[in-house]
Image (cartoon, rainbow, N blue to C red; front, top):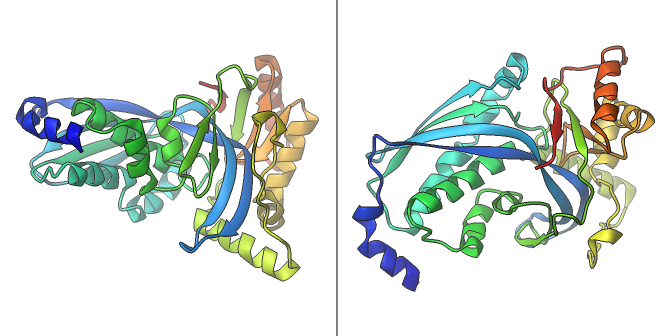
Amino acid sequence: MEHLNRYFKDYEKLTPPDSTSFCYHAPAKVNFSLKIGEKGSNNLHKIQSLMRKIGIFDKISFKFTDGCYEISVISGKILKKDIFKSGLESIANLDNIIIKAAKIYFEKLNIKDKGIDVLIEKNIPLKAGLGGGSSDGAGMLLKLNEIFGGAFSLRELQELAFELGSDAPFFLTKGDAIITGFGENIYEIPEAALPKYFIVIIIPDFGIGTKEAYNYFDDFLLTNNLNYYNIQYLDFKNIKFENDFEAVIFRKYPMLKEIKDSMMRRGAEVSLLSGSGSTVFGAFKSKEKAVAYLANLESAPFNRRIVSGSLATTL
């Protein structure tokens, strides 16, 4: 690629000093719609999803090394300690997605003498359906591209991000978007197209892995001989606020349906499982209604641990 050839000529000039620290914030997301389609030859399901970023963030800081990769994780102020600890194994098993993102970026530019030392202040729990890992990795790609002079176009970055996970390319967009295919097709929605809700998220004390959720989904379809949904979104106004995972996840974890129902009874315009769970979110038109729901949460029979400060306005 011509722009990469220009970049290699100025590589030494663009490389930042190893002692310099860099920082970025990676937002969480919720799915206002998630339709699951048929499997492709890659054994992945096609999806159509309307996704929105919300105002809860992981904070990632890093500095460059001489080729080694290190990562440390601390609990942020929002994430409760027990939820944080329960996610440490998942973080380790990821072969962390942030490290993977950096390796992919350096490899594509044939940079062999750089590594990163990363510190994550974790506020977005893993296995919660909030996209925390994908957002962290996509954010690293964006930050590295900024540092190294924009070597890749947005489309090229999205192709790199797709190697990190099906929802990672979404986090390279500025706002709401409809995602189709296996996650590689992204259609950004105008800022004023959808209401700006106040989002309340409730995260129980257990996680649900994406692979685990898809296994439930596949078993359910085989058992009940159902057809896969494959709806083509032609207009965002035609999108129904629904999540196909609810049909199976709510069977296994009925407490999550109770949370959804309670939100709808108490004034939420929309309440859904986010992604494959375990988070349930409610979208309220006013901050007052959202705060009122939280105020009544403690007395609810299904009360579980929640992210403190779980009220988050959309970006």
